[in-house]
Picture (cartoon, helix red, strand yellow):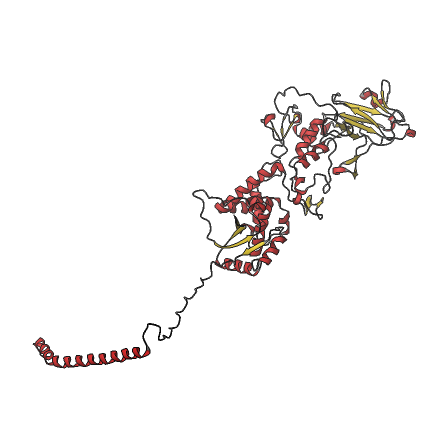
Length: 561
């Protein structure tokens, strides 16, 4: 019962292939890759892959002890003889074990049953398979029964003795008084892996008997499920403890999965869903979920974000090709994962708008794109890149109290969000530069044309840039606590320049007697004398002209001959 259902599916798919090791689920596609060596395997190295290789001698398995963190209950995990209780869940969503050992109750007892599922082998479809419960080494197989029930637990020597309820040679494991509160049958680290048969002597013939298949060491199962927990989709929604979506995992797989899932959670849990987060079982999707990125996947997401960022600046043709795809292509025909660049392009284009849908607030692809690209410089496009579309920019400068070192990346992101929202533009239209003195913030907003620039400038100047107080309030609403010291009005680049007229000349100053050292009488005398002299000169000129007139006439006649 504790064997992973995933391994059973893989084994069924492989049919009768020899059980040799391979690398399982390295690409998240639930397939085995036989060409990968164990040292290079980034998935789960398991002997169930059926690869054609000669495996080295297996290293010794750890004992059932308290030396390792994933051992529980004194170095063992609990395996209830009657399965698990789906309606009783404890820490991390772990289902309670059902340990009741009762008469007239069904327990798998090695009977043959035909398989009807899609992964059944031909033999299982036609002959069937023996029904047993599964356990791993380092398990405590737990039986609970009252002292007056007459129940006991015997280990039967053979399958034939078990079927015949023949207790000759049987080994008593738990007597009639040992079942309250419970009696445990231990499986040690090196116990033989086979099917074990148990029965109650007083009720064996009425079905109080069970067949238990001891299959695999607990550490292998734990390691396999640890690999499943690392990078799990539950991390996005902070659901490693299964409080939103239940689980069917059992021990020791459960402990391995939870340990890895929690270890891969980001340190900053502000990405977790709020109290209205839930899981819709019918739609098989989280509702109002989170935006968290597993630590193990963050670098990969950031690499994709950088590629999309460069594409948006340098290759709009390729961007449009991704956007035009109805569905992004799958990475593997066997898995659900899709090409990550295409997925991020679609999410960014969907959410990088003036008024994004409410779901964008929970979109982790868009979240990592916005947060990571906020720390990047505008990419330099390679030679031969398509020419970008013509745009118009407007700039505003503001000064914040404090120092550059006091601003976190989150503060810078929220400053950018505030300006984009205040201008009524999409997030990617804003770029922000920072300089010392206290903190000088220069925001550049890129828009399509002059009309858009005018609208953005007007919206800013009448809104968050109307005053230091208005901007201070808007920033604090986004979590930026730094005080605004000064702002400048956003200049509309499309507006005609304002012509400032030159200052007019001052009026002439009335002179006084002392202006140049001459008295008023002297000035009048000079003026009268100047007038008399001018009149005399004019009279002289008139006399000269009269004397010359006959000569002029003669010259004129001579010229006419």
